[in-house]
Length: 184
Image (cartoon, rainbow, N blue to C red; front, side):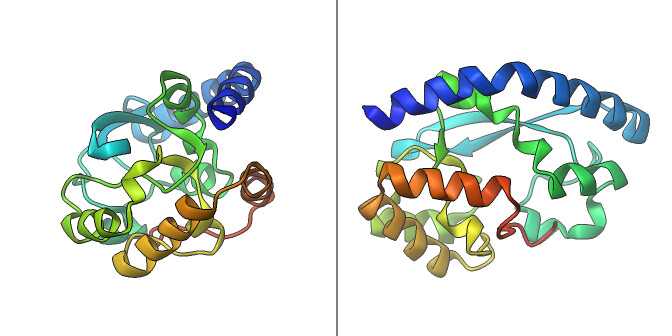
């Protein structure tokens, strides 16, 4: 209950400045790709319930809906490279946090097509938690290309999470620790 309350309060505080940053990013995306600046994709959430994840677009609209590590870094636009490096592409997910589909910190949500990762996460009870904008695996530099390793780290987080650890993960994410995305 405390984690959810912290998610809501921090999201409400961050949304106004995020809107300003995302508006500027939207102009850059439009100029770069002539496409809708928002990218919406169905992901697997808590209790394996599907939800719609919202991000700033970093790849052209024709890019296949595959995990980033399968698409590759060459698909990322010039603007997208900067948005990912500065983690601006993740800011619209604050809306997903407010809706209750996500948390600020938790296992990153996967695609329904990532069967091996889903099976590993199911084995380890990872779907008991809301997915996060960032997580323990991201600050450790582990992405979805290693499903068993990722699920083990996610399970460690879910089984031992604390508010202190969440704040540490958020701080490390904001200061640029880890990558957690093979395509970036």
